[in-house]
Length: 171
Image (tube, rainbow, N blue to C red; front, side, top):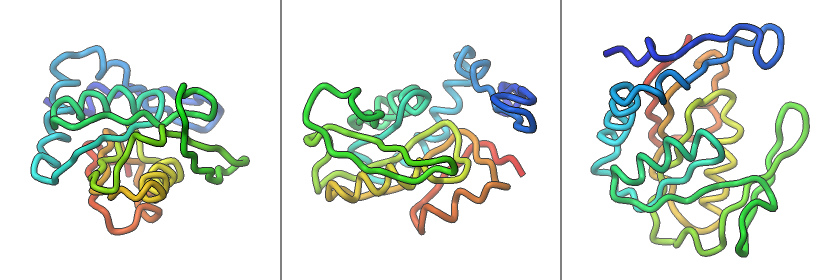
C-alpha cells in the first residue's frame, strides 16, 4: 500500500499558487491511517517515548493515536486561552507575524522523553516552537514524526540534530 495514494492535492488552496496536501482520504481509510500510525510508531518503539506532543488540530489526530500505540501519554499544545488549567507558553515568529502555543504546566516532567508529532513538516517553525516549549519545561525531545514533509521548504534545518521521521517526502 502506498500512503501517497491517500493524499489528495488541492491546487490554489488556501491561496493561489499553493498546492494543499489533503490528508482526509488517509484519515477515512482504516488501512491507510493504520499503516501510517504503525510505521511511525515502529520508528520510535525503542526510543523511550514517555509523552507525545501534538498541536491542534491534525497533530491531535496523529499524536493521540501514536501515544496510544507507544504506551505514552499525550500532551495537547494549543493556541492561547484554550486550555483550562495553568499554562506555559512559547511565542514564535511566522512569516506574517507572531503566534504562541501553550501546554499545561504539569504536562511534562524533566524525566519525559517527548516525541513531537504533526501531519506536515513545512517551514519547521511550528515544530521548532513545540521543541522550544518542551525544552523550556525541562523535558527532552527524543524526535519528530510527520506524515508528510515538504522538502523544498527545508523545515528540517530548524529542528537541529534530533531524529526526524517523515513517511512521505515531497520534493
